[in-house]
Image (cartoon, rainbow, N blue to C red; front, top):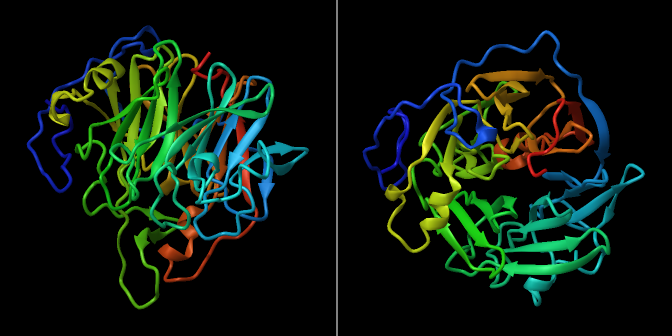
Amino acid sequence: MSISDSASTAGPARRSILVIPLAAAAALAAGSAPAAAHSLPGTSRHAPELETVATFHGAMPTGVTVSRSGRIFVNFPRWGDDVPFSVAEIRDGEAVAYPDREVNEADATDPAGHFLGVQSVVVDAADRLWVVDTGRVEWSDAPDGGPKLVAVDLATDTVVRTIVLPPSVAGPRSFVNDVRFDLGRGYAYLTDATPDGPNGLIVVHLASGRSWRVLNDAPSTRPEPGFVPVIEGRPLLNRPDASGAGTPVGIGADGIALSPDGEWLYYCPLSSRKLYAVRTKDLVRARGKGAWTDIPVRDLGTKGMSDGLETDRVGRVYAGDLERNAIVRRDLDGTYRTLVRDDRLVWPDTFSIGYDRHLYVVANQLNRQAAYNGGTDLRRKPYVLYRLPIGSGPARG
């Protein structure tokens, strides 16, 4: 059965859901169940300060990741901006095409061999850069071979592995969003945030490259019906032209994070303020076995509206709070704490924790795009990559 909050509602296929209280004060790093949530207090009086790492005067970035040696990589989705390359390394403060210009050419005649519409970049525990490619250019349908995971060896700066997601797992309208890796067990986990659905999680068996969907259109992976957040004093609505009143933005499973021991996967729909957790063993066992109702999901309460998620070495979960221009942290006892509030954090998107014990975050002003503001682009360059000290390293070890 699906375990969720009594106020939760399903997507198109509504089902009744059971409320089960969660055990408090559990230590995630030890592999026990996530603790129940407590209320979100204000910003700490000793809140860390944001430090500017890089600025972007061209295309809008979404993802960031940091290698063991401190190399920083970012990506630029092809949503309508002029995007000369979709994946870049920050070198001397500048974004440089990575691993080269050729693979960054959006060549739809060879979709498996080129970056078409990259949504996220993640360095794994083996210090390889993985690229999450939606295969979609300016929201056109993805060709077969477009949705994929691509691994780049950072020692040689060359592509060493491409795992294509088949149409049965990521179809032409799918929008694979972010990924986390458990190399010990040999799996990767992705979110599918497709704006028009279906939404769910994707499991990839790394050795074989086989993949399957789980929690497909479950209440926890779907957007909250009628959800309308207020960001920078404006309701966030789909409003591509000034003539319409706008409609709710319905985006499902988006942020994703993995506990340090690999036992728990955290995720959240973008159009929601909730955080959910599921045991990874249940996702692995679910391949071809029954519906999402057979997978127990834990509702971890209200963290705020978030895009990206990340976990640190001791198992704390970091998330954005888009409506408050803030970054929050879920501690091991289930308490949500605001780490920093800053007007410069306009849409804190993706998070990455470096071995320098800093949390890196891209603030990309996504809510100011023309599609949400009556056709007027309100973004003001530059977009900024920030970092702040957190006193802990990445969960991936």
